[in-house]
Image (cartoon, rainbow, N blue to C red):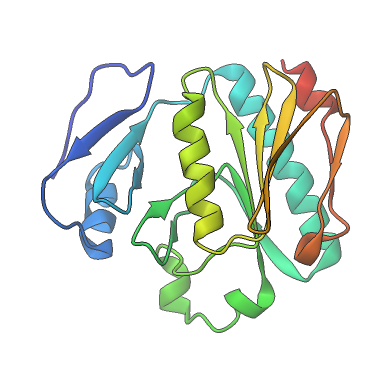
Length: 200
């Protein structure tokens, strides 16, 4: 089903009032390639507006750093914002940047790798855009953690804060930092926040 929206300045939600399977959602995305969409565990499709200049620049810097580290480290693969992960809850979400260990990627067949990835990433990072409502983002971060992500970061460029999410601790918000070090499976990755804070 193709859908048309006026120019969006905030996320829009579609509820078809029926169960949406992974195949249904993949078909929806294929028929609406210009839309960036996610599927909630409750079967609601959320359409995100295009990123503004600052947010796109911050995402690009973040992804570049994570990819450079992943290529040098070689223990896993990094992904940019167009990837989609099928989570155990049935939600299909796309973080702004993510990393997955080779142990999770290698068992996938070539056909599985071409589709939405049916696995839980080991690190996800979300960058808050001006159109993102903080409470909605916090629910999304909680969904990542509940689905088994061991480490998740929410970066707010305007507030210059990073909130760290882990399964074993309440969210921790840090302000005024210039770099952020990962731990666990992604130990060794250090995100330089200088240009992300500076923006365009």
